[in-house]
Length: 272
Image (cartoon, rainbow, N blue to C red; front, side, top):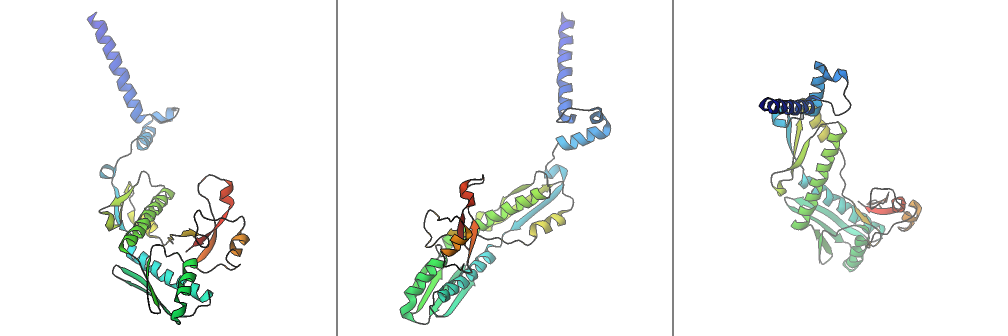
């Protein structure tokens, strides 16, 4: 009786051991004889076992998003758009200045005629999205200032977008199981990138740093109503602006979800 129990236990242990070995070295498909050769086993092990960066080796990068440069460009772009809006409305201005120093971002417009200042502000409001900016007037001058809270919001949006771009680029080159996540404090705007098994980090670094154009655009339709107004054709969208699309706007396809729907065929005005 004891011998029978011992034999049963031995068989059970042997079956479990063989099953465990197969889980490690066996292919995740119908096996062939080639899979059980030495080269086949090595290939299967490489496919089944994914070592982390500490065991397999690889590349470790910490990248910082230059949010200050982004906010500076945003300030300059809006200043140019403000000047264009006033010009298109036939309202002359003496000067439009963009100022970006430290954590201060502001745009100053000096009107040629102080009595026209309210008209200029209205013309700008219709053409330029300054919803994140605070406006103040004095005499013939109006100043738009970007508050600290708005700076933080826009910087965070830029960092999140940069993280998505990095993830998509790593996927495009076939990096297996990369780790892309925020690093340090939220205000640091840093992104940690770990790439197990990558022996040529410079190539990946150049790919990640390759020049690209990041645009945070605001979907509008005069005077920026909610919900967004869409148009059936590009010509119809342009006609809503007087047949001429201002330099700070574009007409783009508009969709609220990924799957094809009738709404995906509509066009909306994009403020840039």
